[in-house]
Every structure is written in structure tokens, then in C-alpha cells.
Length: 224
Image (cartoon, rainbow, N blue to C red):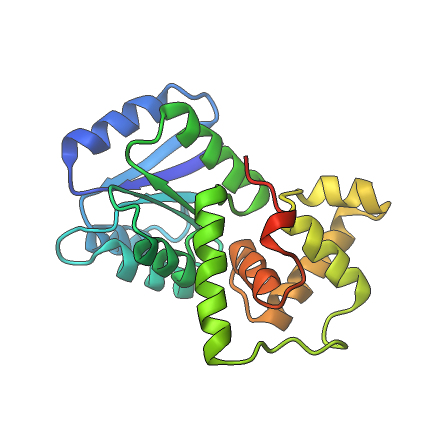
């Protein structure tokens, strides 16, 4: 079961999303919150029953989605955040990716696209469509003009770089293990080393790091 929390101050929209998700046999809705403050209170009081995924609106009273995502990214990095918002402007997208969102959906997305995104994020750790990847790449180009990247040629091993490229290709642990003829446990070990070496909190952070340091190019990625 994929455990999900919905966070949106529009009750009618939130209930509509809940109705769609509850029809899926592998989804379980743990909680619904109308703002980031309610979400954080729930997480702090229910640390034995945390969600796998949070669908997060951005503009909400009290604590907005960006600030809530920052808190969760620090306190509960294993939870994956999917931004679900009306805003599709590049600054909003870049900001949410920067603070740790594993995916970004606009509210005019189809139910099928939403379900696909949730399953992809759960299976592979992130899902960025082509437009989001373009925004990420443009934002990183701007950042690179301000400062140099921090990749040392000897910093990552050849195997770690190989696995990082496969992660960016949206392959999960078992798929990577099968392709490289190694065990899933070995893949997880390399993944953990990559997270530590790149100071990334999640797989989405690894993808951003790989693009920033030209380990992969945007043209080589496919996020259909």
C-alpha cells in the first residue's frame, strides 16, 4: 500500500482528489490537511505511521506548501513530496524542486497523469515531466553562471556514476541490479553513498546534481 496525505486548503478540490485516490486498491489516504501547519502537527504526533507520499498545495494559509516542504525535507527526508498546485510558472517549479519536491503537477493534469506520477515517484523516487526537466536545466544553467560546480573527477567512482546515470533514467533498484548483474542490496549501498557524497536528501536531489555536474544531459533524459 502507498500511504498518502493530501494537503490543500480548498476542501472541494481535496475531497475530489481523495475520491479518485480511494478507488485505487494500492492507495491508502492517512490524513487530509487544509494547511502546512496541520500537516506538520500530524507528522509530529504520528511518527510511527508516516506517509510515503504527500500531495502538497503551494499557496495555503498559516504555513504554505514551500515552507512545509522545507520542514519535511529536513525532518522526514524519506517522505516524498509531490507539488499539486495551480501555479505552473518557472519560478514556482524551480523553487519546489530546489527545496526537495520529488514531482510537480498542475491541477489541470488528468487523473490518469496524477496516478501515474504517484506510482512513478513511489517506485523510482522522483518523476519530472519534460517541462519540469527543462525548468530544472534552465535554473541550473543560471546557478552555474554564479558559481562553479563541486564535482571532482575522483569524487565519485565509475560504478557510482554508472548507477547515477541509470537512476536519472528512472530505473528502480531491481532494474539497475538486473542490468548491472549485481544485487539490489549492492545498488542500495551505492545509492546511499551517492546521497552522502552529493549531500542530497532524496533521489530527486541526485538527478539535479547529475545535471548540474554534467553527468547527464537534459537531451539524454526521457520523462514521458
